[in-house]
Image (tube, rainbow, N blue to C red; front, side):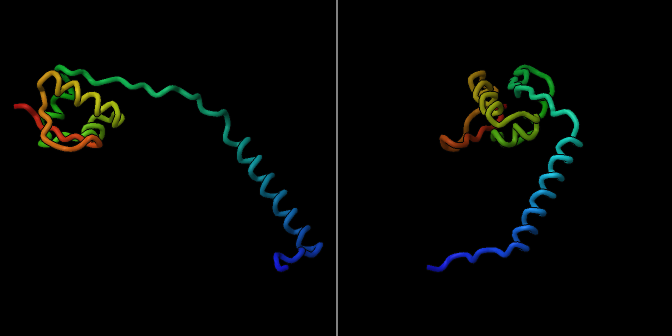
Amino acid sequence: MGGKKKLTMKQMERDQAKKDEEAKEKKEKKEKGGQPREKRPASVVLPDLKGGKAAEELKKMKVLTPYAVASKLNIRISTAKDFLEKLEDNGAVQRVGGNHYIKIYRNAD
């Protein structure tokens, strides 16, 4: 019964002009952007386990969580999780708490 009322001819013309103008601006903006960026696959490389910057940074920290390690070493969180698991296998860190979502470690010193 109810519903939206039909637009007048003047209103339809205004809406169409506005849509055409927006499409034109969008097209110009797209052309202005230049060449599209080259897509590169994200590399996931574990930091060196022995020595180096990573070991020094981790020794300074009291508590090691995947987020903290990822922030310090500028790596992905998934990579930080793998890194901490490898360090635990090597005996460099000990797991002190957490659950299956987040694990908390400390230095084995």
